[in-house]
Image 1 (spheres, rainbow, N blue to C red):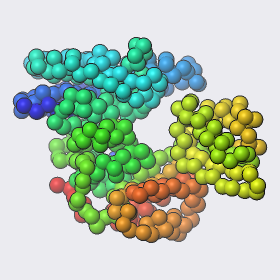
Image 2 (image 1 turned 90 degrees about the horizontal axis):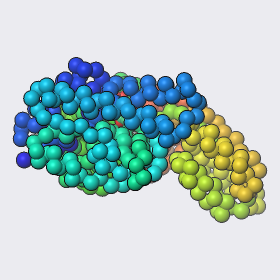
Image 3 (image 1 turned 90 degrees about the vertical axis):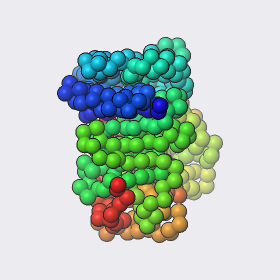
Image 4 (image 1 turned 45 degrees about the vertical axis):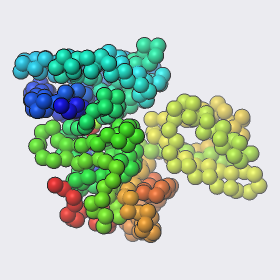
Length: 410
Ligand code: ADP
Ligand code: ASP
Ligand code: MG
């Protein structure tokens, strides 16, 4: 008997008919003799609607109260799905994050899972029940409800699969797998039959919303094979695993993009490294995720420093810089919003020099100015003006031969 974790995203449970359809897919797996744990998201656009409701009340609501609000979305789905399964004669029980003992760190809005005690879930599985767990939420050790960051239900599913030592974890979503780029915006994007954990991690971190990056991190750390496939169309999806040997010829396997980026530039930073580390320590303490960092020596001891953040963190960043200008020892700072990050990803880059040069060439031929760059062994990221984001992604997708190549789709 296999133990499996299935995760269904918002579209897959968007209305009661879809919930019934999802119940049927779950029953198919149960009938194969599997023990089945299901993780679900909030129905359709519920989480966005809850965010909008909060905005009608407050421009900057407390993060704790946002977690109280947003965690309600998933609770609706788990109970309805449990009822749908019972209607079909399959006993099921639903749990919120805290009932399922999903313990997180004490951070609101973007908490990491630190421990899951699976005892309660395994007891119910042994009683032949289907267990349904609310995605995207957990509880701190002082009983505060937290959420895991947008898209976090994927992470609930993979973390549960690790804690339950599940044989596999399948992420059902509204596309048929992981594509070479977001098929919603890049019409020539192609489905990948397989992709490595490392490539998927870069894709997810760099904006490919199909999987929550921490879910991929968990999958890699615990060596859990993941499959991403459609809940509506029955065809094989994308396998994410350690070694992907197919399609070696492709140097770049994906193009990812992310909007709402702001670049901060600090001028006249004194006392080099000491103040540099103080700035990033202060930002980290407020959970501000700093991405690309560029530091330049100017005359004497003064340096200037640029880094990119998400627009959402701009207000907090400005506050920290203004309040600590003297102790951090800099002259002044400016920021530029309306930027985006466009990245190419592929493990073939390790052994192929000139990939970054080709990327810069293509952007320059299209008159797209590059404002920041960062590279790793398997990715090159550029920050450009937001209005060019889709165009840049499209031309890169074509130039790196991702449009037409027969990929490893089964
Ligand atoms: P769910 O609600 O099922 O979690 P999401 O909206 O979070 O669904 O993720 C699926 C969406 O991810 C797709 O509809 C697609 O627009 C987007 N996406 C972004 N990048 C990719 C990619 N490389 N491959 C497939 N889908 C992608
Ligand atoms: N409902 C949450 C969101 O929309 C979590 C998720 O769907 O993964 O971000
Ligand atoms: Mg998602």
